[in-house]
Image 1: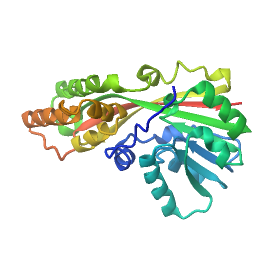
Image 2 (image 1 turned 60 degrees about the vertical axis):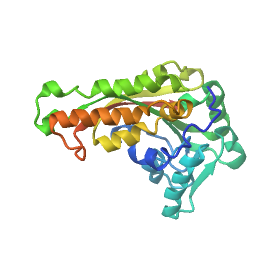
Image 3 (image 1 turned 180 degrees about the horizontal axis):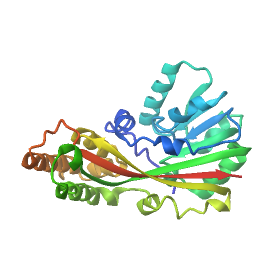
Image 4 (image 1 turned 90 degrees about the vertical axis):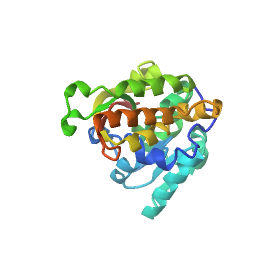
Length: 278
């Protein structure tokens, strides 16, 4: 598909996206291997979560680009603080990159964004215009598996572990119709995409990661969902589904004598990594 609207340009995104979205695990980054380490570009970089984990591995030009102004502003601010002349940020459509760039790249990354593109347009474009002959493409994606109580740390009965999961499912079921991308494909690790049509798929990895979360951080994370923001815009007179989630969880905290300032939850996420070469 082709994204026609900036779905990440809301006030709940930008800085919140950078702060509260799941971060790419080190074990995924370690499996991104490349032949040469001169030039690197991160496409649909968002706020640069992936870019800043990889850019210091390269010796020459390092580029991050996005089409969302809100996301780009955070990216540019973070990059400008480094004051490195070899770093470059570009606000543009990915298909216009060849108008801005004259080089080809040893590594191209796309993190949690391939589902916004028509891959039968994007992959040939990358192959022809941006990727070195011995270059590597790394495609990362993730989805939330579940949220549950950290019963071990809290010292409460393990039977309470999944007490909160149903409320997250209620939130997701409320907004899921507003996703403008194929959620089933994301959850499968992009298994619907025929990467071998254009590249050799050298490697495929799957990682499960748990992170401790407070209610506040989860609420701010959920507000970064494109589907949530579309829902709020579309149904301004309905209850805000994140507000409903937060109030419901607070009621459960009270029953369990938990303080909302503590991080009593674990967020389980599944990360996928595809390594492609010509």
